[in-house]
Image (cartoon, rainbow, N blue to C red):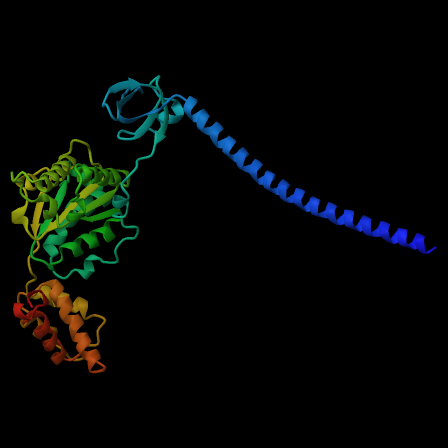
Length: 391
């Protein structure tokens, strides 16, 4: 009896031992299965990618061309990029309705247009386009009534009221250049035009077109005007244009030669070899005497306007604009006008700001005449020896 019990216990232990081994083997097999499953998924993905690349290599190559013109017969006049070869071809009706001069298209070896290609721009050019219109209006510009009217005639009205020019039979000015001392309101006028014209506003500084490598600045100029034509109606405003538009010299340095190449590309874009359509050009500079004569001739900048420092009436208007939301108590603006002769609009704005800061320093409830006099002394009567640039 005892031997029988011993044998049964021994059989149970052996069965338990086999079960544990089988469980471990099962876990090992499951782990290997997971590894093989992941490897299979990776190989399938790689296989699909290779099939896609293989199909891409077997497909005949496409060439990029530019639509030069659409002929009356419906044929398309193309210029191939890279070798500048020109040829005439046909396009499918579905594509032909979308084609326009200047558009890029993809063509095959049979010179058949396959599809349109979107224009690509330098990322530095894209960020120059203002997404939102500036909140500056012409009401924020004190004085400069004649200058504002001439700018609106040359830039805003051709975009907002083109039927007037068609009825009269006159072509509006192609470009307008604003020049004058710093702080007189040149950039402010451009911002007001951008707000009023309800058009795409592309603003850039002339120094942004100056680059180290050959042809990079000229390429940015091409991209700039291509973007302007694509976003038409649009306004291109080049601030500090003297950075690239200075008079050409023959000093032979590579840096000067690159700036001159950029200038020549700008002249070519402005000269009207291609119709700019609803693209208006504005520029501003403090040094009109440095500009190349080719920029100033009619056909490029048809209007050259001087933005002078404000007179007494304009200074009163500027003081009124900047103190409109300020608690100035019994301060007479005419007295401020009399003691700020030759002050620019930017200096008047700084005077109003500094007067408010003096009142804040005293923890006062309103701004007094003493605050304005202290502000005028701080802004206008600072000598060069006190300026941080000369210490």
